[in-house]
Image (cartoon, rainbow, N blue to C red; front, side, top):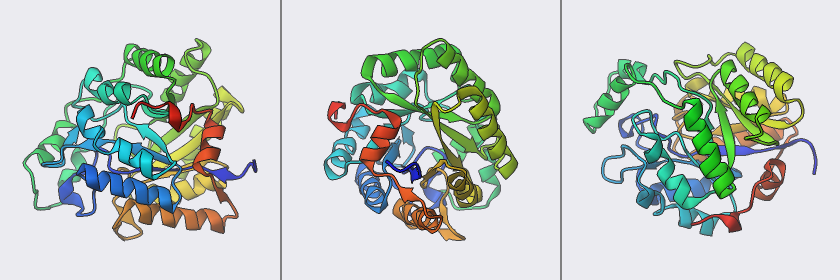
Length: 309
């Protein structure tokens, strides 16, 4: 396999943005399934998935909601399904693990530490809120933290990793998270090839600057050598510039309406639009997009026939 294959991950809906911020944010199981399938058809080989309450769009950890779209996505695409273990900062660990433990997917995200995950600055932009929960959820992030202690991470690695054969998108929001991951590697709780997602631009984590991307890559090289693959997601308007830089550095990329609601200066009309845009950039850099089969090989995944949905 050529060394310049680039994995495109698409994070379809997330729990950061709310329905009032974009009419194109998928909320219902039908919308999430349709958006995920279209993103895969556009070139995404990994689909990172959250669930939302079909009635009002608030984040939910309910496995029954996940199961309304997971089988449909699997039937319609060969893409790798990656389920969040992050959910939102207002969910307990047991709530966040309920759907992944039932689905036993090939991949899950794993936030590498507790942190301030501040969304409240989005309240500064005047808007008409469709639902009362939206400003309340954003304001709640002013005085809560996203909790992933070392005990929490050990639980996730044991129950999902050892118990289900699930591998991880290790989400590193700051340099210290890389050292936490190296600790687990040194203890033998994780094995390569590691798939490390550098997360840039969340208030409370490292900023979305080119210098920070270079620093994260330099420290990851120091800690993990050749036993890892890196990918980059950047929040908001920094999405396309920094993931393009990541690709030029030999990395992989993540797009999706979880990370940015925009395609250029206009609201993205779909997740597939963002996939199509980054695919064009990659091809302009003479890079090839990895297929799902190639992504599975690169990341040593167990295969779509060994999931529970």
